[in-house]
Structures are given as structure tokens and as C-alpha cells.
Amino acid sequence: MKIYVTHIFVDDQDKAETFYTDVLGFKVKNNVPLGEHRWLTVVSSEDPEGTELLLEPSDHPAVKPYKEALFSDGIPAHSFQVVDLDMERKRLDDIGVNFTVEPMDAGPVRMAVFDDTCGNLIQLIQMMDTTQ
Image 1 (cartoon, one colour):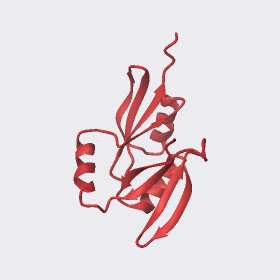
Image 2: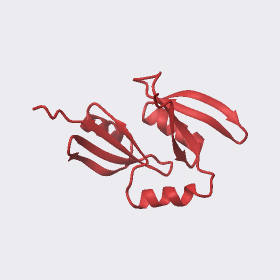
Image 3: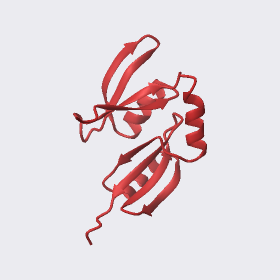
């Protein structure tokens, strides 16, 4: 068994598609019309056959208070792994991404958190070599 798709609630699918593809560098895997919304998934350009991230509309009444609570408490909705956190932080900062937590050591990882502009905080992590 493996994870096929996971999701993140987004305020606007068009805006999310632009952010997750143009800014973060993911690629659209599925874009299927479903009434007023779409089955819109993206994948890592580094792993196009890997787990898909569904950019799911935030329409359900329970989603808004849930997202607002996570955001106001500084809790990331998702976590993405990068090879070099400082390099990725600089790249994203140079194109205007707002970081809410600067890169820091957190046990076996370095981490940072940014605002995805779609109502979520996203955590970036870099695995640290703990064998040294």
C-alpha cells in the first residue's frame, strides 16, 4: 500500500494552480472539470509519478474555521522536503514568497514555514545528516 493522493484546501483553485506550479515548480498531473470546480492535482517535477497533491476547494463549511485556526496558530497544513533549505528559501524569497518562520534547526531537520497565498502555511524541511 502507498499514498496515491493527499490534499490541501485552497481558497481559489486558479490562484493555487499558479502558485504551486509557477512559484513552487510543481507540475499539473490532473485537471478534470467537476461542475464549478476541478479535480486538480499537482506533482513534484522531481518525481512526476509520485504522490499527487489535490488542490481542493475550501467550500465545505467546516473547512474555513479549520484553516483559520491552523493559520492563526502558525500550524503548517503541509510539509515539503527540499535538498537545500537555505537555497530554496532564498529562491522563494527572491520571487516574493512570505516566510513566517525563518530557517531553523529542529532536531534531525532544518525547517522554515511560508504562506502559500491560498490560506495555508507550508513547512519546508531539509533532512540533516545525523551520522556525523
